[in-house]
Amino acid sequence: MKVVFLDRDGVINEYPGDREYVKSWQEFKFLPGVKTALEKLSSLDYPIFIVSNQAGVAKGIYPEQALEEINRNMLKALGPRVKIAGIYYCTHREEDNCSCRKPETGSIEKAIEKLKKENYRVDLNSAFFIGDTVRDIATGKKAGLKTILVFSGKEKPENKEHWEIQPDFTAQDLYAAVEIIIK
Image (tube, rainbow, N blue to C red; front, side, top):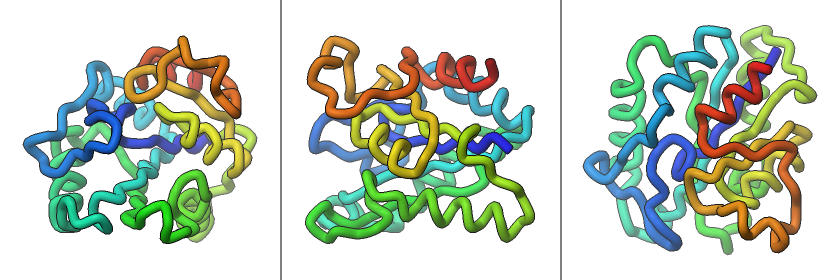
């Protein structure tokens, strides 16, 4: 079974900028083509998980309730044709050394366990991680997933020579990444 893991900021919604955070639903702006891309994956019954670092909570920049409100509103705005199997956020800071903070794979492992409990047979060789940073790519590789780096957020193609790890694929945005997965 193909499983798709997505980062949030820069993949689903506009990247807020380095050291900036989406602190409220009013600041959350979907990127073009996201809903269509997620509808396409959902129509093919691919379990979709969102895996994101949200250290702004631990830093006191916004409360966890704001993050939960963003999640609720995001799912509602995506509509009934988009089926998100789970949302996993690490709200810790980097120095907390949490096992679910990317590039660690704790959140992916939790998602896979959830699927196994629901009697899904997960084939990591056909699973994908889509992110907008080299850290996302490192997370996907560490978990044994195929990786797609999208250029709709933080990372840009002209920085390729500085990447310490190479993605399996690159794409302009989530819609183009979904086209790669489907092929």
